[in-house]
Image (cartoon, rainbow, N blue to C red; front, side):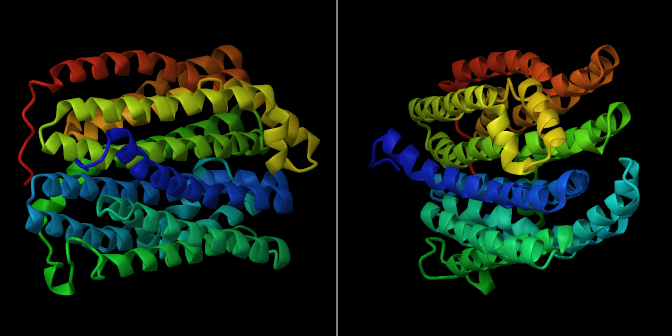
Length: 445
């Protein structure tokens, strides 16, 4: 990393990371496109009500991947190779030890969870079909998120992108076969996702245990270490909260849309959510490319390079977010029609949702980038505060605005709360940068 220009190194890591996470976003977006055209508003409503539980699985996978990746990179930056190897091993253990009980719980509480959001009859049955498949495959779902992150920290960002691309292509092909041709509904959508993710996991594991891995892993080195597993979970905790926050927000919006509207508004919210998720994955990709560099340079005691990487991350994530937001506001009908097909009622509801719900979309990129920056520097408390703040600040907006403005208030709660939080995060980030030079890099454990 020290032998190249910072900008070139940033793009070397960020481009594959952005591509990989946007490919990951395609899993959700492609599901939505096929479901919207094959099953209409009912299918979109069902998958949106089921998604928060699958979001919990993604959250745990992100916690393991980001936490182990940050610890592994810091140990490599300090030339502590046995510790770096151990942190990688803990990630593999945690995928299994956390995946099995989480998946079983997902299958168990799925029917209750759908009923909680007001789903009944056919709508509830569709959502339960989706959750059962994902629940039984939870360790694979975890691995599809965590392992590509680890490959980037091991210096193989291109292979991480290839692994996710292979999985995405298979997912698209199987979505068409299962949903359009065989009409398996949401069961088919979930099965296509799991099979695609399985290929990504196999490619990543093949590299981790190959001679190309600079840490030279073997089964003998994969011993479980409770203290280092705890370090991984603590470091990645804020990343888990980011996804839990998304799941919580989806549940609350579903409840409010069912109260003030109908499943049609839930379907429109699903469409707005797919569009927002595509940008969110882009921003997460920038974070994934930025994190190894920030961790490494901070561990090496080079604050100027840390600042340079942060500037590049902000320009990329927030700048692109502004461009995407303008495009959505100018052409909302075009983007909504990708999912709604010829359903005019769904199209009209989605256009309104895009204009009200996504006008501040770029602020989500800024918030997630700031949290990732704190996390990469080992500032778990600040990272967690940003993410928890992002969750808590929405609650009063969701409680008050719908009472004042009805459906419009539900749509506006998220962007207005992000405006308020961003002002606080800007202050936190500036203060951290002012203290950076005087901060001594902590020793990697």
